[in-house]
Length: 204
Image (cartoon, rainbow, N blue to C red; front, side, top):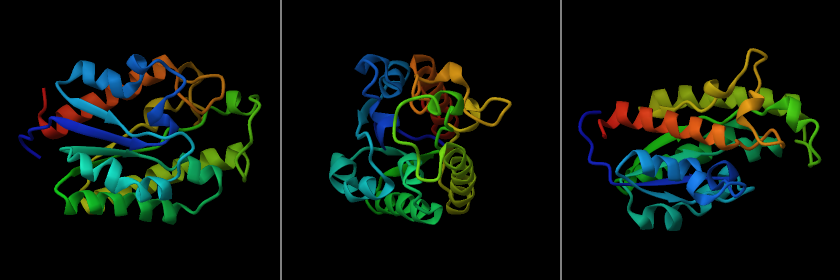
């Protein structure tokens, strides 16, 4: 996309972005700011769905007038068995709002679940079960990639770097709940984001 003067980025998402389990300085959004000369704003809210992100997109993103928004969502929708097409509609509605207001969008592909940990953790399971949810996350990642390619919107792949040879999240990147990344996982996310932003926008 050539030279792009990137100064402010909003990371808009759910608990994978908020990362309340980690110290603020250890979260992937903070790690990005340490590696690139950017002002990074974290608007993640734990438990939020794509509909929730869309409903607060204007005050949380547009009114802050960033140069770029990174949208990472979908896992909570699939937890509640919401259709993939609904998630895509909400996600690309956000991207359309961003474009209208002169904000560049980047879409993050969702992280897989670490089934070996999630299935042992005491929490409410997804409506369709853990394995079904993990399969739908994979389907969502592919659908998001395809839709973004057709819309000429850049994507940051946060799915495949976390997958092990059993096609689920690798335990070394996750907290005990098998859903949220640990410190190593956050470093992985930050690395993927930084590398992709540098490749797409020539930021240094």
